[in-house]
Length: 402
Image 1 (tube, helix red, strand yellow):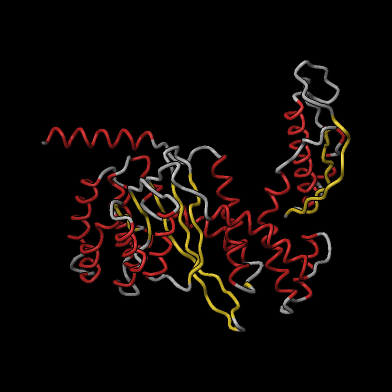
Image 2 (cartoon, rainbow, N blue to C red; image 1 turned 90 degrees about the vertical axis):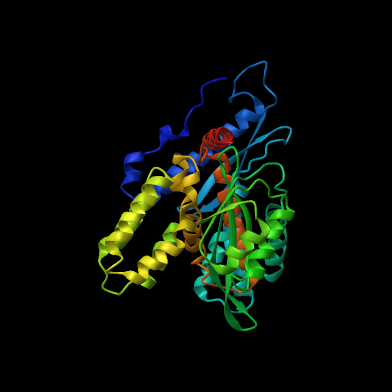
């Protein structure tokens, strides 16, 4: 195949760098344009004007298409082939979450609760004005994709690691603004890749809401869970033990250290919690327990209430020590999911108060689906071969003792 020519040769990069915003817009536009050209060459198995026996068709010009992004509107030339077979995922893939955001804002406007700013943002993202019928049709199309993602079968593979957490969004309901819990489940499969397994709305974090959420995952085929990481919310903890009794529970150590503040006076010695934090960086459980004994002996006299609480509850935060050493930093807390929640918060902040539950769930799921697809295509998050070897070694040790 002929060597690809970059259309960037004619761009005045020095002039663009002097205007930072325009520079980034043109760079992104150039990259996306190259992606489109590459996709067409892959379809035809030949470059522009290239003569080859492997050619699968011929080009038929271009059509213009705009793509609205956070760096500005991109004006692109989408290639066409004579047989009409060329199709790109660039637009749908990138704009799925943007569509959900647009719909949330559009619903606010159509329902008469928007401002001139909301109208301006929405029309800029859409590229045109909108009506109630347009919002309804766009909603139907997007919801079909998101429902398929949220209800997809999970039984084709196992997820030895499961991370659970919740965050809250504000939703308008019957003229009243209420807080709704967003329940999220992430899994790590045996390929070592992170996956968004479930996203649902609930009135609050309760035993019944978490139980229903986990039962839903099980009904969709969730299996092979060996370790569940979460905070100490009582409803969540009870539901894990009931629905996933075969799994070991790891209490998030970050939440545990925050809870420890409740058992300390306001002007406590900073070294106390700092030294307690160090227990989670040890190589194995034996070393951690030895250092815990030293810590208790040092601080028992000064902070008796804290030490008694730690001694009673800390074992729940040490389950990760049964995992391979390389997995410790990733699974001793819910930080993996917290980072996703921070991204969700950043993106939903534009809406602030959702016009209804459906629009809230739609945007959250669209963002989750976007993240899931990026994770699947990225390099693996963990090497699960280490867990396989770790299990074999543990089994061998048990057999020797027996």
